[in-house]
Length: 328
Image 1 (tube, rainbow, N blue to C red):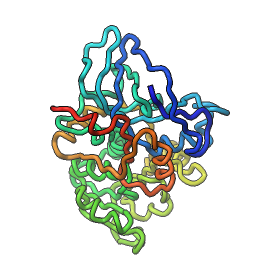
Image 2 (cartoon, rainbow, N blue to C red):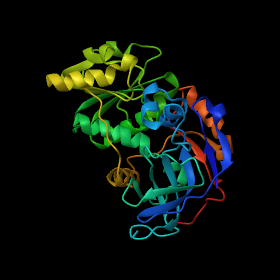
Image 3 (cartoon, rainbow, N blue to C red):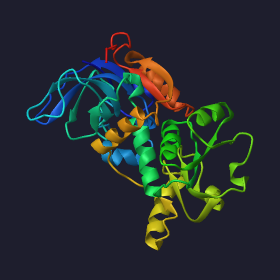
């Protein structure tokens, strides 16, 4: 099978499209023929070993995971012994969190992992959304977001941000999205109640206060935003922040019992994928697709993600869309 392989850390130039062995499903595993995947911020960080700390978990000198890619959507090719939830030919989607491997024509996933039948009538490229949605919902649950709560989402145009806007609205929250000028109409179309343009105004001077603030792109800080938090309000960042400040502040908040800053960590499972599917089928969540690339041009997709200007998700069509068409 074809796969995008990186045997060393570095820029997108280290990626090679190679023929590698097709995986065989073990007992309890599902073999998926991948139709679509994404290049995400996680993939970019893993490719470059940025931050450096990833090397301590995924290979100090060379990467242990040589095929990246976490989001996937495709068809079940075969199942291992004992698998009862999935059948060959079934359309599935999910996330191969920390195992990676989706930047390839085939991927093996445990039956009890984050995999489910695809949403009714969704295209494959519309279903590779679980990483962004998973992070977004993890933060919203950590906030204990309730109807009527006011949330500010900074960087609401990325994969996590666009998911957070939609899911926060599904929870009944009042959403303020902070984005660049070109994304104002987008976040309004996703349901944001208010949209602020960070390029023309200082969002910290609005005079509003919020129950929770999510930095969905890791480009602001708690210290800049703290005046916007209500008493008892919570700040969360989707990145480590300068000098690793977000996890350090989260640890201090836990020690003091204030919960002022949180940095939740979790491994997504079947419940997440089922949740995303239900939200999509209810019309409360949709993919925001920036660009699409074939697998052979995946290095160009990484270069685009390197600009840190992507909107929503960057899709890799492992199977050409025309070939991947299927009647529902």
